[in-house]
Amino acid sequence: MTRQYIDCREFPSTMNCSVALSADSPKELLEAAVQHAVAVHGHEDTPELRHQLAKMFKLGTPPVTMPSAKAA
Ligand SMILES: [Zn+2]
Image (tube, rainbow, N blue to C red; front, side):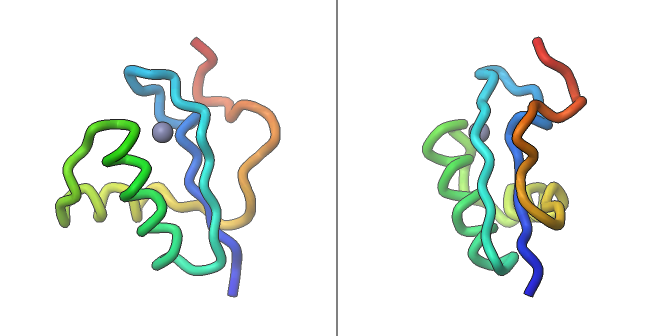
């Protein structure tokens, strides 16, 4: 199974969150991402949120350096 990750740094949000999560299965990653989104970003755990998060998953591991998105 390929490692996957989601990196908050790629999504300039209100709080400049620098958290990155990774897991060996999309299911684990989704659960962790949902918990993070709810606890830290104040989102609600909805099917829409889960869908949005799942679209942000990438293969591999989070890069050490800030993704190119933008450094505020
Ligand atoms: Zn975050």
